[in-house]
Image (tube, rainbow, N blue to C red; front, side, top):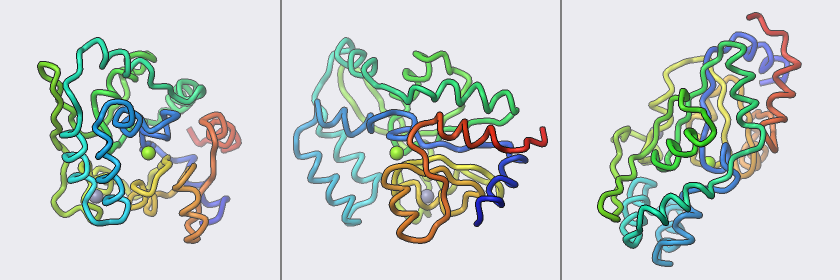
Length: 223
Ligand SMILES: [Mg+2]
Ligand SMILES: [Zn+2]
């Protein structure tokens, strides 16, 4: 898809789907959490997943089981340390001024997303993610958006969540790929950008949400 075509799609778009970890947040909030608190064996499962030997759902179950009991105080402290892109809030304001809805689809944890959005006064953004349950200091995981037919075995099936033919997607990882490939307009960073370049998938590279705002400001909006 040429850049011109992507711009043409963009000016009529109603929905933007966006990944959370590593896209909106500076660091992957799930992996950083495991790095700090989980039994180091979590990397063993991470590698099995990277090698395609287990699904991301199975990976999440195994990794969450390696979390110790944690006080509410420690958990809050961690969630409070999650940093987001400096221009994400501006980006949300910009697209809302164009009547475009933003929906976060994440194979990460709802708890982190919920609290992070609250902290930045972005409560009105819809999101779909795995449910990290926290009860009496203990963690477990549930998959309210699991799709048994998901080709990549995701806990939260991104491809199934997006029903539109024309949509914009923003992401950073290879797990975004199934949905990213179908996007009419794709903004990609980090591993997703590298993958798209290697596989001739057209994408608009970005480093921060300010790049996406700049790109969008050049579009001749029809609304
Ligand atoms: Mg990500
Ligand atoms: Zn899927």
